[in-house]
Image 1 (cartoon, rainbow, N blue to C red):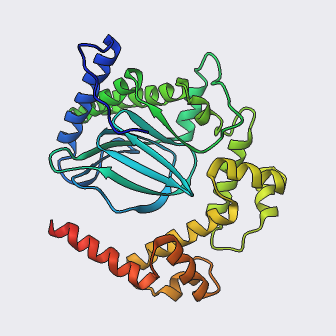
Image 2 (spheres, rainbow, N blue to C red):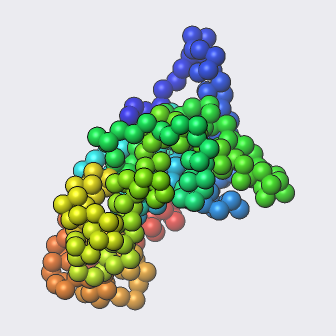
Length: 321
């Protein structure tokens, strides 16, 4: 995806002009609602606001199902060997729990990175799917659990209504659920809506929904030895079908997914303090400290002790800015 493009209102269609006006309002409201760098939580469950005044270092984590809409700046998401770039013209949707790496690419003091993130509640998503007059068109050749879509007036309008409500919190209980419902409906009814609909566990129970069950099974047991047979049974799939569809959704094999979960959790344990590398390795399921150190270095670019030292230095540097 390209960086943010600027349209000339004199030559743009009325729709494009209105879209630009909404994007400008989104920047204005986020700048006011998130005046400090970092994550800003809100009274709306699952809704958070982000601001950064400089490009970030790569950040590893498990991305829960969510829609991320940038008002200003640009970000890149890494899923295994795949890159997903998005900016103020696009939104990112993650439809499955995925171990990813994210990095803010464009941000300055004058034009900070500003982003809205809304976690996707599966029950609320299923409720909105029931209101569609026709199910979204499926594309069985592409079932990846993350995608980038173009922003639209239809999507920005309920997002803006939700942000306006944050400035008059007395109306949140009555009106916020309506805006949240419309956001999910607009995502489902959009060009890529089938990618979200296929993750729902009701209805036909397609491969993406079964992989969602497999991912939940694996997340609960990531520190245990991986049993593909047991995982396939939990997903109601054959082992060969599980391998094929798991990689189609996550861009990695079950073993690679488990390894990323283990290493990310080990890094969190080390950052939390009170445990050394060998203890963290054992806690997340590694039997060999040397294997843990090798795989940790491949994923994070340095062995545990050096990586931890670098992360602490970066944190001190941010505090000193």
